[in-house]
Length: 171
Image (cartoon, rainbow, N blue to C red; front, side):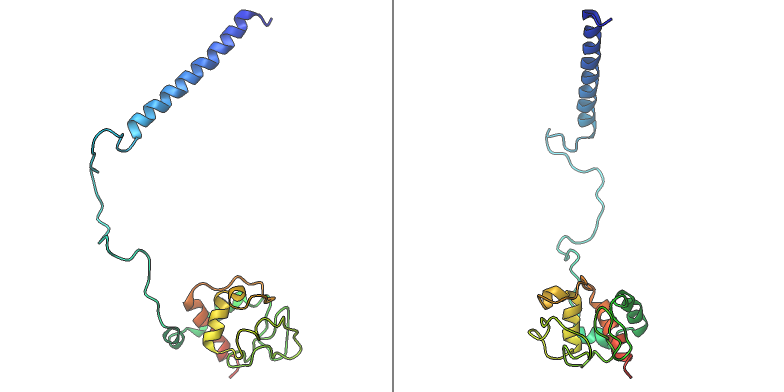
């Protein structure tokens, strides 16, 4: 059943389909190609989005003390949900990470009963709000070699709210 005429028909069918696809591609490029490379074309309708000199997405950097002064403890409690998997707020109750009761103002690596990696002692002495903010932004970037595997909190507002919440838990 497989003779020369059948093979010629099959090959002709594939060549015809290829020709249709190539012609379709050429037609689509002709219709939808912007500019077309033929002369200068202006856009028919331009949407004004403001000044071209405006900063693109760069928000002014707010001082961390200002953020901390306006921090929301309730929002900080919600942010603490990310920390709850490894840390506890009860005094002396260590988990995967050390307890965080009284961490604001506490000396680094002093949670009783917890074995630290030693990387934090090389960077800071005390957990001030500024040191906590830098650490929470990127733990491994702030203290290379730390055992904390958390990626960090990129938003300064979240860090300020969390620090205010942690500071409020130890009376």
